[in-house]
Structure formats: structure tokens, C-alpha cells
Image (cartoon, rainbow, N blue to C red; front, top):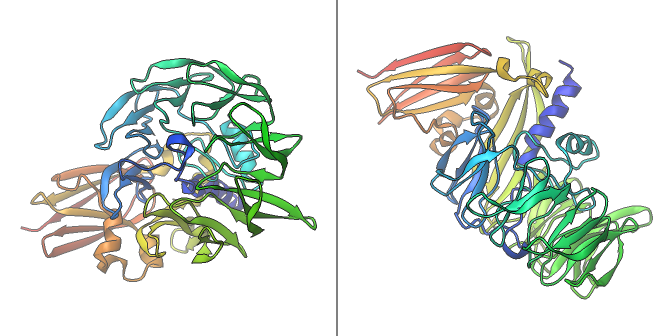
Length: 468
């Protein structure tokens, strides 16, 4: 496998966990009403949910996930006929997985609504990434319920209610979620207008882009420039910006060209620049803070433009309540001399408003898995069977490359819990895991046993531990 190709694939797949703080009620960032946050297991590559303290509440069982919105979260299980459905905060199905895809890929403002997975991968080369395969996105959206309806797709896009029934039939090439009784839609993939919740057109298709309404204003694009319209479709802020996001907490991130170099600042509702355009990139405000990038690193500012959390992250998402998702380390290759394999590690974390880490995990993939894009990945997944006697032991499976790069990990209970197998109370547990080397940690009370094991694709490895 060519290292360049494998690294690019891993970035496409692994970088996608950024942007988790998507859209919620009335166009504001999701309130995460369930108090649950998505995370990805570093062992089996599946997604689950943690609470605000970092405790795993829904085990990593899903191939793809979206944040909770209005009490439900869209998730995908590929062993189910069509795959996509909705779960409640207990992890039970609220809407059966009867949809072929739950995807609405909208990259950054200025990209197309209804972008396909392949188009999303191509956009990543230009720095705007989203992925169909892993369910979470970068500078994009994975929409949940808003104002009682959610976007869903068969061959075209439509809107379903909480029972999973289409109330606006799928007839759109692309669409956005509802906000203030309006949703941007396109029939031809080129021109965008707005419908209401009955499916009737209320603003004719005439824009190159159409965003969500917040406090009566929505970003649109005309002639390659962004401005804002009101709910009647009248232009309120003249299109003049390279990029414009929707308003949040009274401010909207916009990109302004100056001396041939574009910089981001923030606009108020009157169209005046409230925070000067001095940032390389910026996202929307939430709970008084907004992520911005300076000198290639992301940090957070307040509404006055004052730095609150110093820029030190490879990527940062808006806060949802007291937590924000950040990327601490972007995909980086590591070689293992004894195996000749190359691994790529991307480190994510949820931080609090003081910038302290609440929950951290590493996404570790053998580089050759990159060859499997568009093909079966089965040869990169193996089975790990663990027998513990007596039952009730806590089981942790830690990739050896994480052990190497995190000194003291195995003795740190707080960090170690990120690798726990939720079904560990069983006497015999079989789990699908990435094909790589692991340290298996079995803990029963104060007693701890550790085993090294190498898992090969398509094969089963057994670990037996007895405390008797």
C-alpha cells in the first residue's frame, strides 16, 4: 500500500469526527438534549456515546452515528437490512433501521447541498472533508430531528416524522433541515429555494446556495458571493462574502478577501463586522465561545473576540453545553519494525470550557486498511475471544501502538477506561477488532492480569485468564 494513499484515506475516515456539534432546534447548535456525545472505539472502529463526565452510556456498536437531536440520534448498523434508523437515549431503536442512507452531506458553507460521498472525498483534497462511511463529519452536517421532522433519503431526499413515516415525499436532489418553518431544497441540484413543513414552496428556487434561518435571516449565495435573506426571500445583507455561515448567538462567521488573502471574522445582524476578519478559519458561536484558527492551530474566542482557550488543537468544534470536540493530533504515521506495518494515529478529545480534557481516544488504523476503500474491509478485521474465570472481570483491549505512545497508560484508570469492553461481565466474550497487536488487561477487584496478543484479519485469537 502506498503510504500517501493510505494516509489520505485515514484522514478522510478519521478526521470526520470533527464538527459533531451540528444543527438543532430552530437552527441553533444541537442542545444534545439527551446529554450524550458520540465517540469512536479505538479497538473495533465502531461508534457509541458517552455522557458529560466521559462515562460510556451506549456501547460502541454502530458503524456510523449522528448526534442526538430532540431526543433521537440517527445511527447505522450494517448487519441490518437497510442500515439507518434512530435510537433513543437508552440505545433502543425508536425508528427501525429501514432507510438505505441517512446522509445529507453538506461540506462547508459554499459547498453543494446533497453532495455525494464520492464528491465529499474529492472535496477533502481542498480541505473540506465529509465521509459517508463513518457517519460523522468535518465542517459539515449530519442532521437529526428539528421542528419534529428529519431529513431522510431513499433515492431522493424527503422528510420523515418521529414514527419514520415520510410526511414530505422524497423528491429533492438535496435539502437542509427545517429551521423557523423553512428548509432549503433543490430539485435540480443547481438552484435552491425554500419549502415549509407542508412541502409547499415559499421562496422560489433562485440561489446557488441556501442555508438555515436563525432569527429571521439565512445565508444564500448569488453570483458566487454570500449574503443573507429574510423569510420572505428579500435580500437583507447584500451578497459580498466568499463564505457565510448561519447566525448563532447574534453573530455569523464570514470570509472576507483582503489583499488577495481571505480571512474570517464575524458579522452582526445589521451587516456590520463585529469581530475583525483576522482568522484563518472560524466556526459558529455556541454558549458564548467560537472555535477559530490562528497559525494553523485552533482555539476559542468569546463574543468580544478575546482569546479564551489558546490555539493548540489540530481542529476544534463548537461547544455543546459544557463540552467541545477537538482533534489533538492529526493523522500521523508510525512504523513497527517487527511487523513492517505502518499505523496512522489521530487523537480526539472532548474538552471542558477551561480547555481541560474530559474524554480522549485514539483512532488507530493499520495503513494498509486504506487499500480497502470501496472494497471489503473484512481482511483487516479479526476476532478476539477472551475467557475470564470467574466472570465479572473488567476487560480492556488496548492497541499496543497506543501503549507505546502514551506513557503510563496501563496504570492510569481514567485513561484506561476508554478501552473497556462494555460486555466484559460475560465469562466468554468475542469481539470484532482491527487487525493489530493489543495488550489485553483483565481486572477483577484489585487483581490484574495482562496478555499480549496479535490479531490477524479474518482469524480468531483467544485469551484465557483465570483468577482461581
